[in-house]
Length: 139
Length: 313
Image (cartoon, rainbow over all chains, first blue to last red):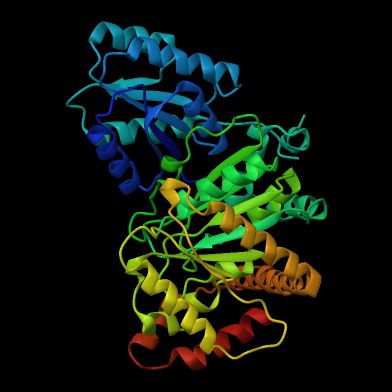
């Protein structure tokens, strides 16, 4: 069986605007991916724990609250701590250009800003996951 | 160090990788399962099934917490449907699973059905083998929202809880074959809503009309309100009573043996159909055969026999 792309979508912090992330979830699902949606008010440790348990290829984060410069680094840090640095982290939200550049430098694979078509995110994810490879031996 | 080595050390990431390997049926998954199977056999597998929106995830959440309180290690497998059109899935059972300890005592994995129609994924049963060998005391298995005949859960669990809600139907519904027959415990959830007393009564009446078998387990009907964590202790008590009853009566072992027989039949079927489908790819005249059938020159019934003879030669 061809490997399915598994992606975790989460909203960290207190921001309750989940319309956008639901649109993205539906688009990913319709593109044939397995989308694990965890809902609102997730902390960075909860997000990373869920990503590890679900063995996802990528974590997608939606932040519309302005707390992106706090939350993205916290998630990256947690990923490193848990040995999950190989999972792709991407996100979207109302994020100024300068912050976007800073976050992508920090290790966020991609930031999507308002107006980005869902096809762009799908294409990004498919290509980025295809580039990932693991030489881990199972047994 | 291999993934399996780390799995044996209790590494959660390794557990997740092993599950993916088995779920994706990668090259040596049967060999891997074979190794894991021999170290298992201790985990109690509890199945929760019922119509969409009955509160399965919420009750899984309640049960997981209750078992954790008993100092048990709990693993959950939650299945949601794969789209027959796009192959994608939205796995949303995690939404109700916040604030669990992340110290390895609790593990939750979402699975998509990937084409299977019996309420579970084809590989769910294999994942229970992985959980068992990793050392979970209890494995909770949540099916997709089911109708009346998605009953795979009976082949994968030691105990089946059928969850209904007051809106689940009248007395004739409770008499129907299928879902209503597989419960070891009935749980009427959202029991604070109107109609729950009526449903409980109708379920009890239906159970009373069943043929009496001596020394059989009397299927209890209990009411819960999952979101208020109400009556969960009673559900746990009935689960424990059932398991004790099964073990004392020898039915626990008998049931597991029946499941194993079924499992080996499934593996054999899978292997044989794999061989046949592979061989069929070598038939250069296959397109022509289909056209002949379409034009009525031959028929699928005769042809299947002929093709089978060609394959088995």
